[in-house]
Length: 153
Image 1 (cartoon, rainbow, N blue to C red):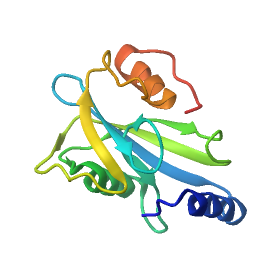
Image 2: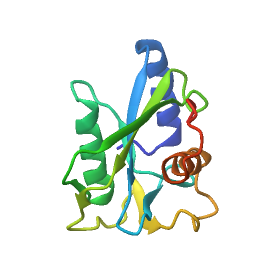
Image 3: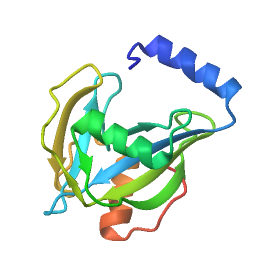
């Protein structure tokens, strides 16, 4: 996992010139009380849904399962629902995010804080941390409150 901000920027420039598109998967993990799992990274501000980039020769469903396991110790026990695909051009040109709603899961262990994930917690949708990202807030409104869907993260 790369955590150096300068190296991250250099890699983004490399990817921009070598790839026409980047793709990520994020999971909106909901518990029985409709609380959402959010993570706080060690390398960027705010609270986000867990997820990450699709690797070469990896299906997007595999990406979702891998990232949920790595970041939060979440094991899928059912099929996640693909809710939408969003452009994320403000963060990186040609970037897209597929959002999956995850209602069937288990969590046998909570990984300890590390350089990538500083913290993880479940939050009620009406009691999110102040620094929850705008994209996360928009997706919660779409999924849980039926807000109109946007094509932009």
